[in-house]
Image (cartoon, rainbow, N blue to C red):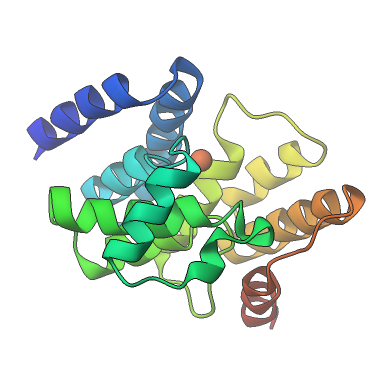
Length: 186
Ligand SMILES: [Fe+2]
């Protein structure tokens, strides 16, 4: 299976900007380290982390085409869904092209917002994307620390920071993010 990682890395290198490729590699490394820490499936974590952003640089026409072909909701094309559509599109591609399993597809599909009752794989992908070594934003040090102490609490803090930034920019917060938050606060 390590060979599939090498193959996917090659695909990504050909189709992503250098910035996005490096981010994907960084997320894979962070996901691997979280997977070791929490005894999750390391290969699944690495594969999901590597591919989570594979559709992030698709243009509107390509997104439209994939949405139509797969009968997804056209609502995904709305401005307020700009930050989540790439997860939905990537979920389709990893299923078709790489044959990923349902839990992997779900982790990739919802990696921007999380979802209610996330499994460990989804939690690791969500967090690794936010705290990988290339990222720097207010609050990240606390998130990095918490990620290895209390994964649920780390996601809660991460979501709160994310929501704060979106609100500051006067943009709409996707309701899935609130639902995720509600499901993790006990
Ligand atoms: Fe990402």
